[in-house]
Amino acid sequence: MSDATTHLLLPYILAAQAQKHVTHNEALRLLDGLVQLSVHDRNLTAPPASPADGYRYIVSSGATGDWAGWDLNIAIWTDGAWLRLPPRVGWRAWVEDEGLLLVYDGFGWVDTTPAALQNLALLGLGTTADAANPFSAKLNAALWTARTIAEGGTGDLFYTMNKEAAGDDLGLTLQTAFVTKALMGLFGSDRFRLAVSADGSSFFDGLIVDNATGIVDQPRLPRFKAYTNYDNYVAVDTWTKIGINNTDYNDQGAFDAGNNRFVAPVAGTYQFGATLLYKVNASTNARMRGRLVLNGATEIRGSRGEISGAHASEATTLWLQTIVLLAPGDTVELQGTFRTADGYFAADHTSFWGCKVG
Image (cartoon, rainbow, N blue to C red; front, top):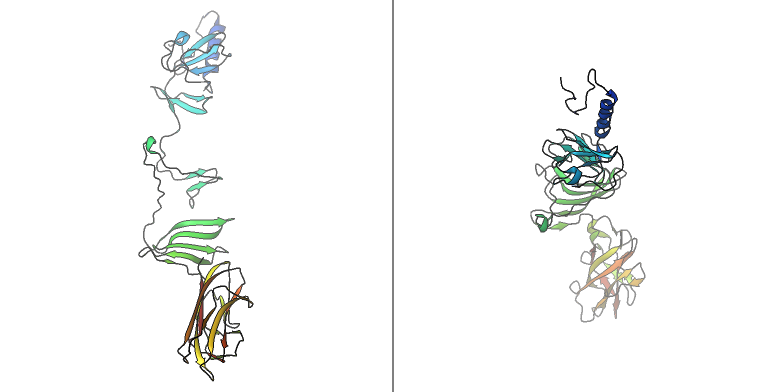
């Protein structure tokens, strides 16, 4: 029969043993040192100068002094002396100065933090993952940074997302209070899309890039082309709003055909152009003028033009073009007038167009 336990080598109290309390106390001392093992340090090769009673250490390789030959053993300072505990496979120790949990594998103390995590079903960081979101994280900041060349990397960083087929969806969902406000990615095709929503159910494409051509489309961009379907009579030296009352197209409904003007839906830089076709009333001595007017009162600088040469009815044409910075609700209208003689701005070919460019 052995005189010590198999795993912890705690001494037994033997039959007819004198001073049994010595053996019992030795066993308690060993238990006190081993149970819930937590060591102060694992990098020392020589005992510290003034250890407190009960301090424990994993002795580093190359030990000297009172620890000579104790490499990788547990050293406990107890009752004024060092006690040696040779580790067994599976012993675990918390290293206090590193905040690290180690396990003894028979050859050394190894970090229990895994070098790799493979084929996990669920992973929750600060929150609970579930079947719908097998990887979930609850945090205030995240960082991805490239492994440098000095670290054996390339210095580059690519984040890859992949979908099975072109008709599937792949993208980023941006939410407020778990209501989707924006989508960015490849949805239902391989074209890149950026879409926004007010309620998480109805979405508007703000940007689409064709992956086959690289052509960029902004489907919700305010743009229009409008014209007048009747001859607009204008007197001499009287600036008059042209009755642009029909549209060839009117994206976002920004052109108000009932009031013959464009109304800016959002702030930005807009480009406008116009074509005014002359039609004679009584005399071709008329001299045609045109301009674009902001909010019904202010001529937009650079938009005014005039043809001062001879006019030919339904042939002489004046072109205008300019850009202007608008605030939401600003209006732009086309105005015309004549010098010398009155006349008409001809139906169908007198037109006004514009779009947001920035």
